Structures are given as C-alpha cells and as structure tokens.
Length: 383
Image (cartoon, rainbow, N blue to C red; front, side, top):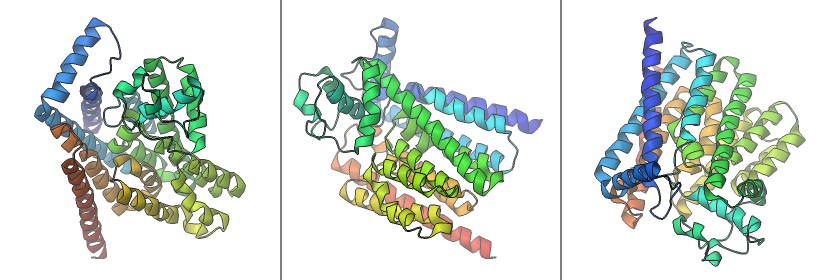
C-alpha cells in the first residue's frame, strides 16, 4: 500500500514536471514566429520570451531543475519495473502519458522539424526538387523568418522526402497545422519504436520486455529528441528495429528490405548491410550492429559536433540489451550528459565557438564517466 502511494506521488510529481517542461519549451520560441493571434496566448508567449531571451540565468536553472526531475523519476520507474513492482497497465500509462503531454511542447532545442517542413514545401508549393533548390532560394517565403540552415539543399535520403510530402499536402500550406501533423507523426514513431522494442525483447527475454520498452520510452533524451524537438533519426530507428524483428523471425529478405529503407532515410545504417547480406555474426547480430553504428557516429562527430539526436538509434538498440546492468548505467549517464549539452546555449543565448567547445567537453566527460562506471561495476562483479 505504501509503495502504491509512493508511486502515485512520484507519478504526480513527474506529471507536473512534464507540464512545466512543455510550458518552458515556449520560452525558446523564435522571435519572428507567432503561433496564434489570440490575446491570451500572445500574453503567454511574451512572458515566455522574456524568460527565455532576457532572463537567461533563471531559464538555465529551470531547465536544469526539470532535467534532474525527469531523470530522478525515470530511474525510480525503472527500479520499480526491474523489481516487477509496477503493473503492465501502469507502464503503458506512463509511456502514453509522457509522450502525449510532450506532443504539445514547442520544438525548443532544434529547428530541424522546420527544415523538414520546408523541404516538403518546396515540392508541394513550388513544385521543385529540394535536392536542387535550397530554402534560401525562396527568400520571399515568410517561413524563412524563423528557420535555420537555409543555405543547404536536401541532405537526407529520398524515403524521408516521400514520407513528408503527404504531411505537407495535408497541412494545406498552413504553418501550425503542418507543424502539428509533423509532430503527431513523430509521436506515433516514438510509440512504434517502443512497441517494436517490446516485441523484439519479448522474443529474446520475455520477462524484460516491459522493462526494455520503459527504458527506451521514458528516457528524457529520447523524449526530447523524438517528441519535443523531433528528428528523423526516429524513423531510421523504426525501420532498423523492423529489420531486427524480421531477422529474428528468419525472414531475411523482408529484414534486408527494411534495412535498405532505413538507409534511405539516413544513409548511416547501410553500414550494416554486409552483416545482413552475408549473415555475419548471426547469433550476435544486434549487438554487433550497435557497435558498427558507432563508426558513422564518429564520422559525424568529427565533421560536426556530438548533437544529442545522433544517439537516438544507438540508445534504441541498447534498449534491447537491458539485461546488462552496465549498459543501463552507461545509457542513463550518457543520456543525462547529452541533454545537459543544451544548457550552455540556454545560458549564453548564442552558438559561439565557445559554446560548441563546452558541448564537446561535456560529451567527452560523459564518456569518461561511463568508463569509470563500467570499470567500477566490473570490479564489483568480480568480487
């Protein structure tokens, strides 16, 4: 009875934190963007803009406090799930409730979703090829006022464009409607990834299926990068998980087809093709695939910087191996440090070289902490 009361108290605390985070996300709304002309909303937006742009120290500490709350609740729920002290219904509720609340948050930490929208808009409104035309070529378009990376042509695989064009058409050139359609699609992708992790783990270690799905779905980094400020790494993971699912069912051709489709969103997963085609490391294919995905990650980090969303597919695969405690610890520590990467920008307000360096330092510190945690765990287990 006492444990049930504690669960409901923590769940209430978690719910309030989610609501506050969704509200806080509007503090990062672009100054050139107005989502709604309603006077009440306008007053709300102005107050949030003042917090995010003109009271950055307070904004910084609010963000840090909410992130700490998220991870504390996340670890509490994981502990309950690992000890079989939480029902399947409660697990399902937590997954749906958390992602459902964050669906209404503003994409505060990345403008990528706006780029996805405009890339599709080049096709649906201007009837041109985004591989040949960049957003900056349409300088009179009002959407450019709040966009970033307008100087590049389409950088993704063709499948992502094919999937986003219908959303743009349904949006009927209305910005808010199009944004909601895109966000709802990412919301569904997040739930799909959670379900696929459940199905795959159920086929390997049935008793860990719900724990693994919770491990992925409530990870604050995953929620932020898949629902709040979503990225197409989510659908890349969806297709990759489908590939793993079907190879476990010994349906190799279907599995290879989904691997190909995953690479048609972002090309990095095609590095796994030889493993699937030649059936290398068949007994440990998923584990070896996780290691292989580190290679394109290193290339991306060296060429750019360690953006948090790069690690969504890797964390998704790690969620399939929650029977390894050191992987759990490593994933949680790493996720916390990656979310913390947003803190320097929230405090300083500009992406300077200094901010980029701080973010890189945070990344390497997280790797060092993970190494120490794994090392200590190995020592403990040998005693």
